[in-house]
Length: 151
Image (cartoon, rainbow, N blue to C red):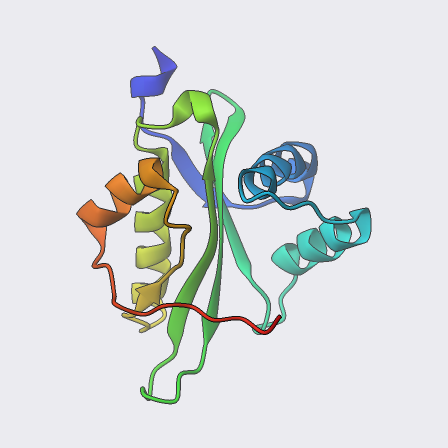
């Protein structure tokens, strides 16, 4: 059974565009949003680019199919000398949830942050994202911060 085999986590490649786009569309739909095609194009190009200000991307692959993705960014922080890592997007295909895909992707981001000398990794989620929060509660500490956003 392929769902019990650990996924291969690797950097995003140009030929991943169709599967990445499909998963990112599903991820955005979960958060009740959609984006125009030019944002997809820009985001994918940035994920593959080499500008240090841009996001990085990892995908989880099983049996030749992408089953998850994560986008993360290193940035400066006013309270620290070293950079911090913001994990912006994390998605596992619904039929693969609960099989270790999310954990593998988060641990790969942790490893990338450690390799860069960036021990702090943080992310946000919606309070209603109960399935993911069960994982997050096991591998991270919830903070008391509340997010505000310009209207």
